[in-house]
Every structure is written in C-alpha cells, then in structure tokens.
Length: 395
Image 1 (cartoon, rainbow, N blue to C red):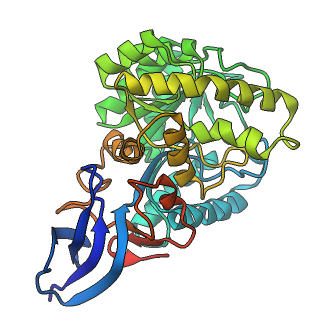
Image 2: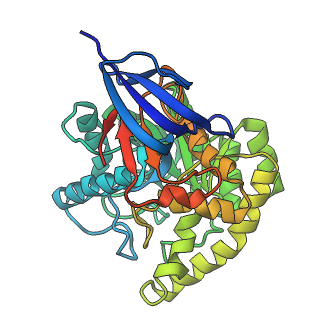
C-alpha cells in the first residue's frame, strides 16, 4: 500500500524563485521518493509527518565537476595508489560530499574508470549514503598533455584515435565525456595557455557523445584551449579562467555552460602556501587574480554558470562545495545567482527533470539549514546540516 510523508513547518527555497515560502510543507510519495505536492499553510493528510521546526529547506546541491579518486592532501592530486585503495578512498570521498550537501555529481575524470563501477553500484543500491554519480571514466588527453598521467587519461593523438577511444569509453558506460583542451595548474611541464587537443580531435569526441545524447566537458583555462573547445562544440568549459569577449560571444551563441571552479585556484594560497611546489603555487596565484575578473565579466554578460569545484585537487576537499557558493558571491553574484549555479549544473547534466529544484515530480533531495541561504550564503556551509536524499535523512 502506498504511503506518503509530509515534511512540514519549514521556510522553503525551491531553487526556482528568489523568495522563501514560509510555513511550507512538502508531500513525498514513500514508494517513488518523489515530491507529489508542495504548499504553505495547512498540509494535507499523510501517513507520516516530519516537523522541520521552522528551519530553512533548499534543494540538494549539484556539483558538476569532481574527482572522487583524488587526494586533496597530495599536491599531485592523482596519486599512485592501486585500484583497490583508490576505490575505497573514492567511496569515502563521496560520503563526505553527501554530508556537505551535494546530492548529485558529475565525475570529470577517474583513474582506472572507477567512477563507472561506482555509479553502477550506487544505482543497484550496493553503495549508500553517497551522491548520485554521472560518470565520465578516464579523460581524453594528448601525449604529454594535462591528462597524461598513469592510469588516468586515455591518450589520443589524432581524430581517428579519439573516435575509437571515445567509442570504447561509451561502450564501458561513460555518460559524460571529458576532454583536456589545454594545459593546467597541476602539471609542471605545460602552461594554462597551451592548447593541447586540436579542434578536429575534440570535434570527434563531441560528435560521438552527441550521437548518444550525452554531454562533453572541456578542461580549458587559457583562451587558446577555450576557443578550440568552443569551436568544436563542447557543452561546457571547465575552469575557463581566461575567458574573454570573443569566447563569451561563442558561449552565448551556442548555449555553452561555464564551470569556474574558483575554489580550485583559491585553495592553493589559502591552504598550501608551504606545501605545494613553487611552480604550482605561482600558476594558482596568477590564475586566481585573473579569473575573478573574467568570470564576473562572463556572468554579467549572461553566460550560464554551473556549479563545480574540481574537488580532490590540492587542498580542495570534498566538503567544500558550499565554499564555492561563497566565492561566487565574493566575485559579484547575488546569493540567489550563486545558488542558481546548482540548478544550472542539473540542466547541463540533463537531469533537471528530476533534480536541482524542489517541485512536484522531482526527487526529494533537500537540505535543512538553521539560517536563510538567500540572505546569508554561509548558511550552506553549516557543518551539522540535515541532508535528505530521496526522502531519507542520510546525515
């Protein structure tokens, strides 16, 4: 027999409108674990009741750029651990992410294709108390490129190699392709300005992914890599630190998303001053100074900004997605605009029909906070927040 649970007596931010619904309630079907109705005032009859004690409810966060396999205490990020140790650490990292308020992630590159197996086991109910995972497997990189790390990147050096490699990835279960279009902060022998995969190579990855209705993310910090990725038709630019007006024009024309991952650069001077090597620290400091201006400009011009953190990179822990929201506000976003980046992440990942906001027909993934996130963005950083995933309190 179907039963329903009413979550009542809360101040509701549904993720869609820049206002709270006071004295609100949510009705959840206990079988489908989806929201069947929302409202204010007197709630309808139900089988079970949960009193949220006049606290603040908001949607679970969607983080579209994570690396569950990485170790944020290691300046290399990708470690030399074997597949068993890496898998155990990855599951623990996902526990931390859910506890922080993240209920769905897009993994943007995993050693050993670990995320493919973990995503399947989550769907089968064999791994619990973790976010849902949209897996990308190992990323695609050129020889000597930003992803040319043992057990991490698939190395491709022509359009034909890219086509075959991406097809093999899709056959293994990849649901979101990740390409390395430029150098980066964490690789010593390249620069953020270095273009890496060619337009033709990236375009092939886009064609193959789009044939399956899937999305392509491009790691691109410098403008040359950004422009190559945009010309090839990717769905999102990851980092995009040196985005300029020419790139913005293309992003607006094509509807491309930008995932700034501000915290990935911010964490270096904040936490790793005496730990990270000088070459890495210098790259991060330079990027941070520039990206704050460039990302703010892209936002002002109307580029769709999606929430992602690059979690797992140096001192960029798996509990820090709420800090990215704070950094977006520091960059010039309103609280509502910062929170909307999570909604945009759901749209980018093509899961917004069921996740990202609180509405009838969507899964009951929500956070319960002591303070109002629309007036105090730091409310989301609350350590002991209640995290509900599919109608069940997990933390």
